[in-house]
Length: 326
Image 1 (tube, rainbow, N blue to C red):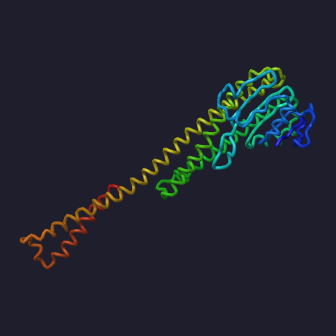
Image 2: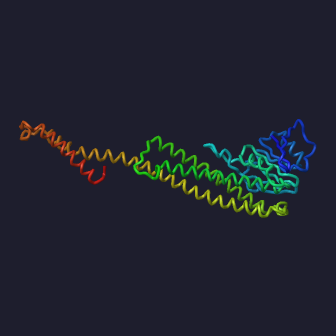
Image 3: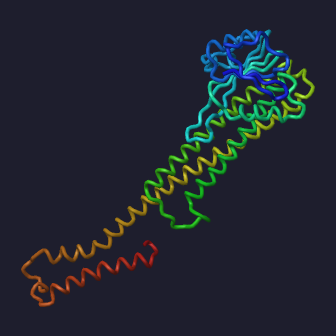
């Protein structure tokens, strides 16, 4: 789908069966979402540039992701998509800055694009130029990334409460399946933060390149905005690293809980074996059936041996309770 956005925020969906002869001068953003081959050709005719294909976006070489020629500046950034689902992904988006307009090519639906499309009409005075449209879009992407990190931090706090219980209460028991689900939730949390860190690294490289673009430096109000976006990305990267460190703590705490649960089970069996060892010893002695064992002739020999076995089991039990081992 091709959508053209005017400087006042109005949008027009373009179709190849009813093409424009030329791009109107007030169109500052041309968004290609899941474009077909015909739409690529149509966009190239309108803008006079070569539109990046899906294969071009997958190229990981820095020289293929950030470069300029005599007609346009080509930028490719990785953005977080489906951040509100258990399976967030990184999707590559092309930003092509031409003298007339900004062209974006994407094969996914990052939410930041919808947010920017809705915000254009609310911007005072609208968006007057393609460089400003690029920077405003990057600013929206940065704001959306900050929102993702805020949700990730809240999610991390919720996981921490699940691990240690409300108010850090002691003695909280975790069934094995609960611990498995907890490890799965930590893995999903790590996936989101990892994808966000990758996106921020990509945006940081992109902004470094954008800072040196002549068409952007020539704009009157772009310097301060460029500096602000770069600073925000740097701050978000540091915050993402902090959240990543917390994930390591969450994982270590979860594995520690699993070890505590396992040690508790082993302790029960160990204490049970020690408590039952003296009765077993008594029973073993009187099971020898030697000829000269006076207790075998007693009338009270059998109940006395039972009492002796019970007492020999009770004494270690209360000793362990006194020591606090139970």
